[in-house]
Length: 103
Length: 287
Image 1 (cartoon, chains in turn cyan, green):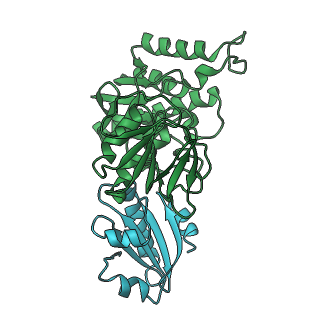
Image 2 (cartoon, rainbow over the protein chains, first blue to last red):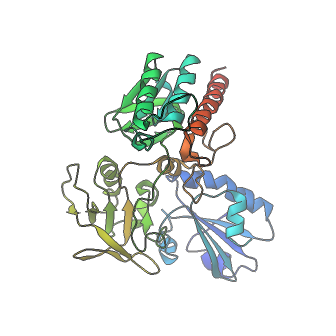
Image 3 (spheres, rainbow over the protein chains, first blue to last red):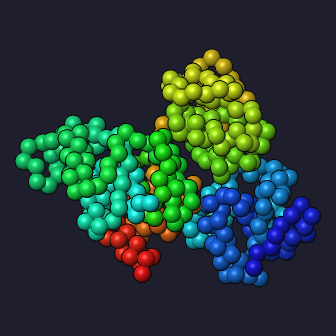
């Protein structure tokens, strides 16, 4: 299960999360994002309890996208204790994505 | 509606088309030009030719062979965009086609801009896909590199997001008509960073930019694949299964654009193998 991240719940769900967080910055109209969607969903089920997985819709959450200088989607970021630890751009296979996120 | 539209008329594309035609499928090949093979002056290592032949001869002979067998081969037409899925809508510089399957066989893609900062700023303000990333630069200063139809296609997308667009032809003459936007023809010598793109330098000037979109030359197979959501590896090669399917149903790729041995013999084999898988795919779809 993934969580929808907005500027309202960002502080609580990401910054104050006791476990690492993965954020998928995406949009409806982006085809690579649509292909990445099921992979992100897979990761959220596989790592349930160990890693929290959130999705940020850049159409709705322009401020968050700006704050993290998202310049290309899909972009996936990893956070530990509220700090970004990795950023991966583009569509990748699950194994490659997890490796590059350091998970 | 075509059963299969093949992008690229080299050994992989033509070989696939010849087999597909024999499966009684409706096939069209769209080839921009004679490709990299057309530039080769001496081929001595391909099976069955006693004397060396030129790449141009081999490519021409491929076109003629496919045509004789009833394949439609359009040479000089350029695919600009592939949209939709099942069927795909393929837009060229001339018209639009609908096809149940698309086979990408355009050969290897070349790095599009060899200037300082290009590699390090990719994904940090440099983008290859207006429809993917244009939205992130609403009302920002956008640079667009290119000089032909591919650039115009990207411009059409990008102008929905910003009016502040500057076109950089990077030393090439502008081949299309562009109104409303500034066009700079001086070559780009450096992209400015360091963290994210802040602008670029040409031989005479410096331009401040928030993003730079690359649409130089002709879109390559990996450009199409990436936009469609297919897996492309860091070497810009399309990732395919042993039967040359991608992760997008109905999208196949064969030949040099999938990497491996960059030889005619391998491309011919890829095309043949892909055609069998495509035939099977189309059969299961209709049954």
